[in-house]
Each structure stands twice: as structure tokens, then as C-alpha cells.
Image 1: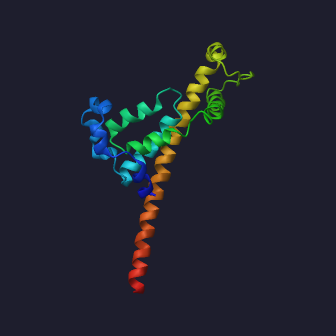
Image 2: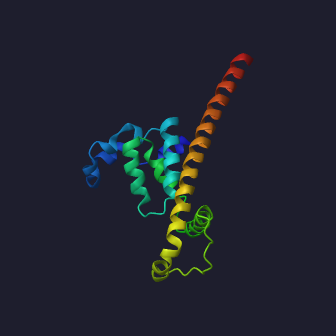
Image 3: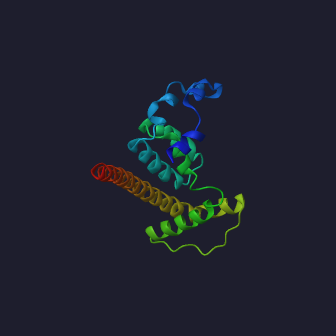
Length: 172
């Protein structure tokens, strides 16, 4: 799996030469942003899952700035943000709104969705707070759950490799 990802990721040395990315200086060339070790990858998965459910635009930019600060695998974090995409965003927003209304102990509004900016601006007072509360709660749960599951899965794989290696050595 890692070889597959490495094959399609941009080369960090090519990024260093890219004229549009020079303004980032040495921040983009931090080796931690490109390593596929347990610590860096699990952090990237967790932060990407967190930002995927944050109801703000420019989620990928938020992941980039957080990666510079926390030093985790940048491509993994950006890829995880795409959990929410134009196809999945409406149902996720609806579920987050329902969850937020439940957390606030507020009855969910009885309205029909119209995909227009006018409708959104008109209804934002009604749906804004429950959507924000539900999205942030979902983001925290998704980030923590992703971190725990990815960390445990990675440990499980390492333990299985050692067991297979030990079994192979004792059989030989």
C-alpha cells in the first residue's frame, strides 16, 4: 500500500523547485510531512478526519497549516479531508444538523432543502448553530476515533508481522 502511495505522491525535491511554492520556504520540506511512519501517518489520518467534518471552506489549507505546526504526513491529511466532497457533503451536513439540534435539545426544523444561496442565507439563522455544534462534535469524535483505530490497526499489523517472523524462524 505504501509503495502505491509513494508512486503517485509528488517528489519533495520537485516541490522544492516549484516556483509557486517557494514562498513556503523550508516549511514544506520538513521530512515529517512526507514520512509514512506510524506517528506521522496516524496523526495525518486523525487531523484529516477532524477537518473533514469542520463546516468551513478551505479545509485542505487548514490541514496544511496544521501539518506545518504538528508535523504529520501532509498527503494523508489532505486525502482524508476528501471524506467530505460535493457528493457526501449534503447528507453529512444534514446528519450533523440533526445531531447538533439533538445536542442543543432543540427541535429540528421542518423545512425542505433548496440548493440555492438565497435559501441558505435565509435559513442560516435557524440551521447555523445546530449545524456548527453538530459538525464540531462530529469532527472531534471522528478525529479521536480515527486516531485510535489507525493506531491500534498499525500496532496489530506490526505484532502480526513479528509473530509470523517468529513462527517462520522457529519452523526453519
